[in-house]
Image 1 (cartoon, each protein chain N blue to C red):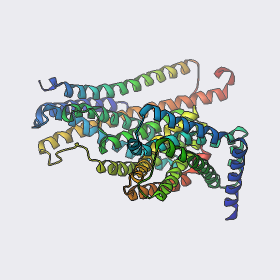
Image 2 (cartoon, each protein chain N blue to C red):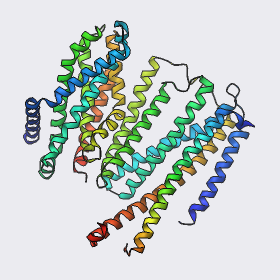
Image 3 (cartoon, one colour):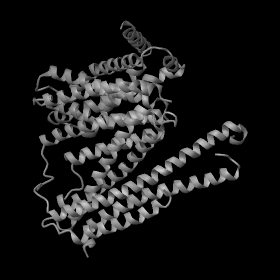
Image 4 (tube, rainbow over the protein chains, first blue to last red):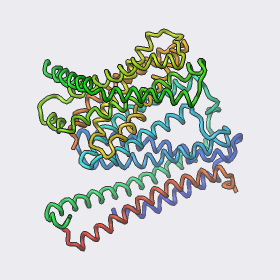
Length: 229
Length: 224
Length: 47
């Protein structure tokens, strides 16, 4: 375990470098948008990985509610936190792309709005985890995660109708994507997935250690109340 | 079957009597939403046509903020003398308590809405171009959505640090689909457009979230 | 140079700033915990 992490870290770094090279030099330049389109290779994988992590969070939360397994709770915490990081990347790179292409930083279009709302939901989940007293955090968080996942279809449905009523000049084109671009996108998605996995792993180890230390403190103060004072 | 409904009724009546004697929640809610109305009028200075466009959002923002006042004190009262702990060790079903609290909050917020609506009509010169009875339906469904979620999240944030802040932090994002639906339905009705889609969406949201809150409330109440 | 496009550069830089920033918080929390564990061991805590 101890050795695997640095090795995987180096491999992932190489993979990310390769994906970076692919995104910048191998992928063909888009005709209308030019080089700005290359933001896409970071923007889209971040969103997909964020959603994947939230999905794992939902599964782990359900599992925790049924089995009360502390490892499931840690997985839920880790995936939510890393998912928020990836979705933040998505939300930050989006406007940087939109500015030169649409001429505006932000529009309340369906996809942008729903991603933002989803981000807000999971940030409030992390707030609950941070503010609740440690004994009850796992259960409350698991219950909230279930509600959050249920919210997702409603968010999409309401915002979809909200915005198709008043169409906005966005998300144009749509047509088929160049297969070479798709290939580069896939490489970047895989590289970032490896990266996300490693980050989750590191965060998981941190959480594990944190809990061990907390338990040790608690045990010590039980054994010797004077020292903990 | 009579026991759970009995507990609901007793708890509900107790809360209503307490509120009737102190009138703390309803007074602060009324004053608060009045402030929102006035501040909005200062900020935007709308004409009649504009206010028809923004009224849906304005009304619900005022009610949402005011509802947080009522929701925050829902459980606080029960914690003071360890009433909630007594409830947890008693064999009474937790959902009866939850339903009582939801109904209580629903009544408070509905009273607020009934009192505030004439004021809105007067200040913003509102006149519904669509069927007005639908507005009542939207109000009932929307209030229920806010109150079910709010009561549940208030129970969740009960033992958290800075509890009063925690409730809106949870309530606003999780209710955003319901908020969109309420605001859009209200605006559509005021402008004489169809609002069936939004009403159905709101009803589905109510149904799903009420069910899940009932399923999870016992876990939340006994978490620790 | 392709990366000379300011928007492209900004987006890629922002991505890595966010990721590295998050990784830094993990590393710092980890270092602090390690220090705590050391102190506990010195104080003779069994765990």
